[in-house]
Image (cartoon, rainbow, N blue to C red; front, side, top):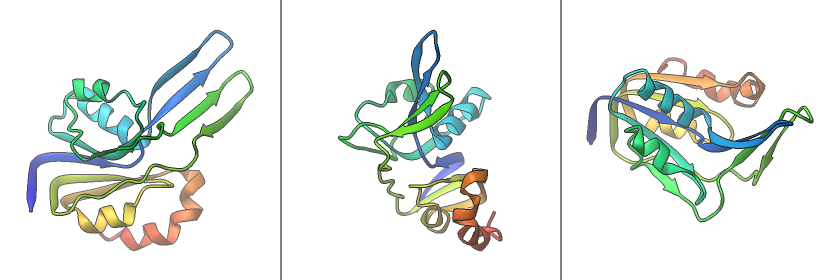
Length: 158
């Protein structure tokens, strides 16, 4: 079993967030796991890995330049999941709404595993396959009703 000592692994979605205002439209890196990994590295933590899926348009170099380990990212020919946050029209929508599949690696061990319980994320598989000394999860309030029975089965581990 591969062991990443003092490591922190984030498992979940990576996306592109397109923010539309009257003044401009900008694309930024998004997704719960990707944003959490970036926050951790910016706070000074080292040895951070990301388990996620990205499309061919994802700016992977930006997270690699921060020192985040991307060896567990699955690369897809399709475009990345893109969330459109349209401030001008007060709505949120999603381009290419089929989530890119995330494959959980075998025989992985880490100090801490953080899993984002979101649609398209195999969070039960991640929590059972990846061996960690510490586990944590996050879930969006809007998704809680969809995953409440699955999450309650994990509470002893978290």
